[in-house]
Length: 226
Image (cartoon, rainbow, N blue to C red; front, side, top):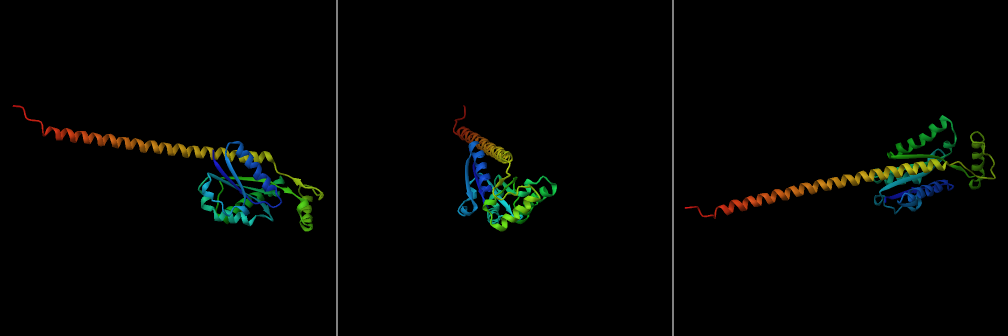
């Protein structure tokens, strides 16, 4: 069993849903998963976990500042263990190369800003939650939807997350974590066996030296034959 920390922040709740889904996938693999919002993670010690995932939505072409701050504050601990990052953005809903390049650019910007290079990266489509927007935001997202998805009915919300993609990301992360920890365990076991072998060899040599010394000393007290 592996202890995995999933830390995220969410705007309208879609990143929280993705984090819960990831938790379910990892828990089903038999792992001990802790899920915390960044706002509630000030006292979390990342070094106590075997692996870590961090998640954030993209708002106005950037990740949430509190997520960036968490990464910067825990950069060394994140880099020292299996890790991954996932983001939710509307760019992922648009099947155009320019949109996909923009989606990639969000991650590149995070890497440049924090110095963290995640082992695994998940890019998922988010949601348009008209019901949670103020009038100005509702108008902005309606205009964006008019030239992208066409989902301009502000009386309802739209979810675009591909849960199969989320499942594949979580599964690949679990596979990698399990394989790496298994290799680390085998390395430690091999190192322990090697140390035991050297120790056993040392004991045998010491016993040999002691036996020779005893034999040499005993010869001095044996009377010469007449």
